[in-house]
Amino acid sequence: GAGVSQSPRYKVAKRGQDVALRCDPISGHVSLFWYQQALGQGPEFLTYFQNEAQLDKSGLPSDRFFAERPEGSVSTLKIQRTQQEDSAVYLCASSLTGPLLNTGELFFGEGSRLTVL
Amino acid sequence: DAKTTQPNSMESNEEEPVHLPCNHSTISGTDYIHWYRQLPSQGPEYVIHGLTSNVNNRMASLAIAEDRKSSTLILHRATLRDAAVYYCILMGSQGNLIFGKGTKLSVKP
Image 1 (cartoon, helix red, strand yellow):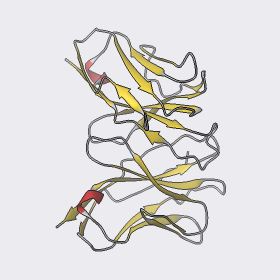
Image 2 (tube, helix red, strand yellow):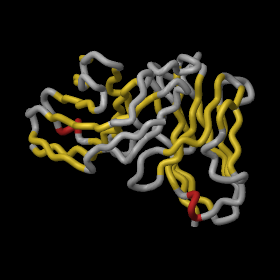
Image 3 (cartoon, rainbow over the protein chains, first blue to last red):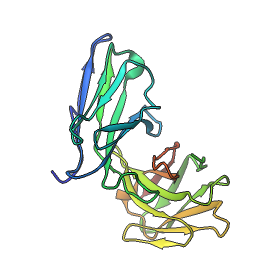
């Protein structure tokens, strides 16, 4: 497709369930980012991939969060044993360059809204 | 990454220019200034970026102070579709975007 695609757009999970969120970046984009956006806040960085290598995972809030990009294209963000505080919009972004070299433009998907009951 | 400071909210009338300020007094010499905006229920969207000189594109203009400690995003004629949260971000060599809370722009018809 023309843009970054994320699925599902909406996910409701019971507390304690595992969830998986998928991101299809723009074809050929080297860099891929995951962000978490709580209601009324700006996006917060979670993790960054350059091709299949996860170069930065400093933003992952706990070891319940795991991200992978095994073939350097599609990425999955997995959250184990979800908690209510995990409720947020999870945004994926991709960029043609890698690394961004200060000038690259990030293209964002529309996000996956996770609600944990 | 260096921090930016923006007003929480601003209002504008349709078809009038809008000047969105951003302070970044701790900017380093290699940091680029990026602006993104986020419309309701959408992901952020790139608007413009610059280093030292003023920049223009089809969406907006970016005016950068001579000392680079502040910048202003200029929308020349606001439309209702420009109502969004505007984020001013400094991008360093590691290339990650660190968002603040941004400025919520309201446009009145």
